[in-house]
Length: 79
Length: 561
Image (cartoon, helix red, strand yellow):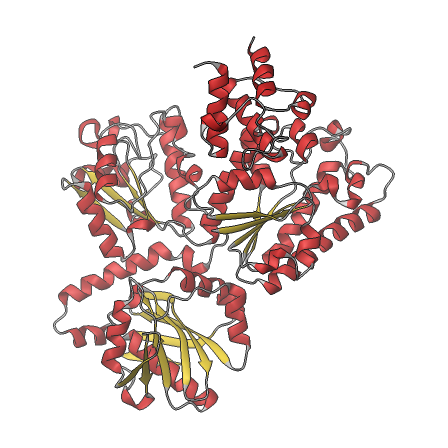
């Protein structure tokens, strides 16, 4: 399973949404997924940190945007 | 449970963690920093619902006066004491306002955690005057004191959790700045779990009986094979773990939990160990029932439960043998069967970590519990030897006293109202403050029943709530602990209630509305036997009418009103 699929899985579990419904620009701004608001995003980030064993900084979390940007940053962290 | 969260910071993330736990059927967050606003405004959405539990957590950093907690230099003792007093006073006032309107909601107030990094770290234990943590501790201490006199307000010690897991694991500064919620994901889950245990205790779902295996559970080794000299329990080394485990069990017993043995052994082998081994902490008589035989353990536990007249869901069974645990777990689904650690050093904390025996208060009744059950088995001995039932009852010298509820017995009364299921007319549950309201009003009263016989005192075992009505007196609540059933004590209590109503309100009869539940059939049967009249109401419940003359006080019971 690649990182993108893994993170789709985490999002799917968290927001009770089908992985197929998650697109590159899904997120707080697009508002396409129920409960994925700024608070939901925070919890999602914490969940990704735990499952992928990585840590984001405060600034990084604050600036995080849509699904694509999350996957990209996570990939950078995992080396 | 329907839960609500209020704070002066952001509890939405904690709310989400709580909502993931099945016990929380509904979790509402009051919103960022709306603790005072919501509680003081009776039109807020806090009051539009009836919540089972309200969780309050306040962050000292956000309380107006708080910079002072970190900046106490230059302040004199008087100023600091005022600060503490005002902080506590304000919090308690806000909460009391809510509790007066919602007396049935259990309020969980989290204590303030001590600071780990302050500019004055070394001063905390190297100076005589006020320091940050001494001030925070004093605030907590005053909160504890105030909460003791407010029924349904209980404190949750956040520091306990922090000590266990470490400050750095529970808190996440990033979250503090991003979301105004200072906890890490792990911290949120841990606090949510602790809140669940808290409400289990608050709703009296605590366990009452601990059933224990012996070999490799209370001591290392096997009694039948290793003998008294070979089993492992001592003041020293690994044996000390079993010694400490027994100590933890003994202290449970001392505060009201019943103990029983269920072991596959020859009684002679193990009795000798209890009586003669120098390092045994528990003694033979600490156990109210001892099933030491070669029958399967599920059958034994069924017998224990029947003998003690308690439900399976009140039982915890501890056994080192996974096969035995599985057998009991499958045969008796209500019984709790925790895992047993292979590592003996984990034993002493095993039971406290379960959190199922936790309690918010201990009454004299709790302290005497084992003794009471032992008197009970002495009674059963006599029963087996007697000739006729009436002669037997007569030989017991039963004495009842019926009296009005006062504050001394309030906790016991609340225990009875919330834990009694079988002989319970209406299965209505009330909080201490509600009981007090009934007792204080002159249109209603709460009567308690104390029973003793020649073997000992049963304690307070019955409660009734009488409400004055136009025609007769209505019996809102009428319950008896199963310990005293079958001796016509229920008749004596009912007659007492009628006499009391006659004296107090000139009431000529009692109206006894029976509300059926899964467990209280016997009340219906009893009422059908002693009441001549009954009527059916529109909602299908049966109202019995009891006239005082109908039944005298039973011959064998001496009643004092």
